[in-house]
Image (cartoon, rainbow, N blue to C red; front, side, top):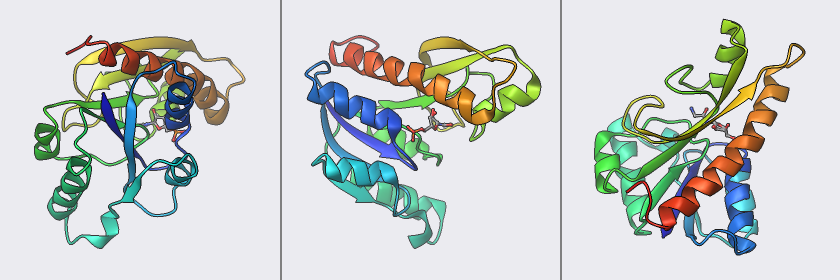
Amino acid sequence: MRIVVLVSGTGSNLQAVIDAVKAGELDVEIVAVGADRPGTYGVERSAAAGLATFVVDFKDYADRADWNAALTKAVASYDPDVVVSSGFMRIVSPEFIDAFGGKYLNTHPALLPAFPGAHGVRDAMAYGVKVTGCTVHWADAGVDTGPIIAQEAVEIAPDDTEDTLHERIKVVERRLLVRTLAELAAGKHA
Ligand code: GAR
């Protein structure tokens, strides 16, 4: 299974995928890692791991449609079976998702459909829920919407900050993402 991974930041979830592939625990080929802006640690660590990387900088395009078209072209050039949004913080167009047969996987640090968006951890804390978690799902063109594949709960501790909670969620999220990719590679969730 050929995957292209899209990142906007640190790429620690991506690193878990890279590590699992290297350890022979995950039978997928990361054919490229792309970002929506230059200078991300996600792209830097991918290049260091010897992976192909690309940037389709949102700022280089006149509008969202132009950027979406360029992103679609860049990703398509690697002919992926599945595209993974791993901390990719931009909404893609329905045309992008169609171009990859709907195989656009996203991971989110909350129990969707609760707390979608860029601040899932902060929003859960602000609401005062006692349990949050993470979700891996097929993404559509909405904000963290689409059919859910896997979820796991994480309790919020009274002394949690957004950072401590997000880090604990990410520990679970990395495992869930790797496991879901392994299941996809084995032909599940088609
Ligand atoms: C992850 O927690 C991911 O779920 C979240 O960004 C983080 C990226 O971390 N994505 C979203 O909030 C999407 N709405 P990473 O760059 O260290 O993998």
